[in-house]
Image (cartoon, rainbow, N blue to C red; front, side, top):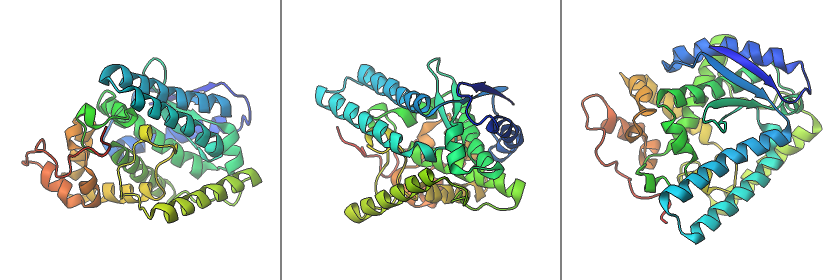
Length: 312
């Protein structure tokens, strides 16, 4: 895989070579760990804050309009979902400093990695932090390519049940990328610890981290909800990022699934066969998922909690 840097924002030019080196270093490890191939070329776009926000929200807007056109959503549901989209844009405007690397579909439908050098600067990001972010982004591209975009369409839709998807796409997508990036960092630096703080963050980034931590605390006190108390869907949330702790929980689930005999083989099949996605109950207990999808089981039987997580 050859990374192609596309510079749209010339700020902090020192990050260009670091991103290119991180992608070259992480790509073969991502392929080995996930057993999924990457495309021959992957574009990495270095963009500004405004460019980043516009592209992320534009991807979600296009997905919502696809739902509207294909699923015959009511006027009220269209209005509600578009209102949530505006709230996510406002949330991203507050949290952009915390974004390392994001994978999204461009207007031509191809996956691209989006990076803001300004955000890396404020994060005080170094080689390890950049490599971790790139490894996650490359994993998302491998997931997308394995199923010709099936999992990406599942991630973007606001209407899982209407599209006959009773599983939990965001859980597995995030957990698989988190687990893979940990493995990459373990191979390269001998540690699989979480990203955490670097101690080099700017005052602006420290303030953003504190604001997000306080937001998570208040939300937790208000709702008393853990990361698996409900299905989190990007298209039906006012928040741009998943519930606090979901990455860690989902990453541990993927590690447990991959450790099973033929478990990694079944995980590699999920991206092209969305019937293998874990349901919410199976996300809480990997053994439930394994009983349904293990080799020889009827993986296409109705999952135990196949009811709609978001009734219309």
